[in-house]
Image (cartoon, rainbow, N blue to C red):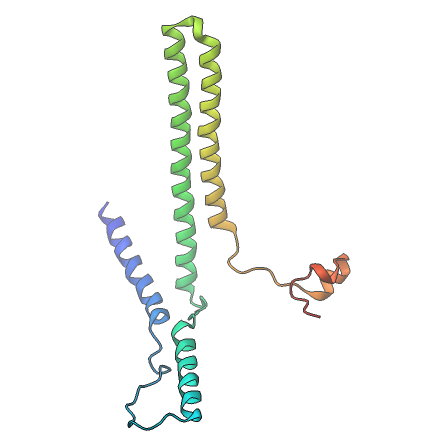
Length: 175
């Protein structure tokens, strides 16, 4: 128990150290505001203001991306994916418990009133279906978190021609 706490705190510290440089605001690119005299604005000043505004807006909203190059970062990504798969296994266990509870309620209801066996069985099948759907949805989300790539595939024109895919279906073909 104590070892997992130490491991969790060290993992959080290392993840924060990896993410901190990516989250820094790029202050050097932000323009500095100066106070000018009360002169009439010239057309060049308005153009200058708009260009300063454009560069400031671009630098403020520019998304900083950082690729995972270090071995530690790749290991942390894989650990996070595996923890998600473990959480999905716990979710599937919950679905199994839910199916067991539905079946127990069916047996209890039939034992109390055997005449309602057909009606209770149809409700139990409906309950099984709902619980199973929740379990399968949990499994689908976990597998997507583990195996879906983050970047879309690139289209190779030679491969699309060889496969006979028309140029209209190629999203990167701008001609």
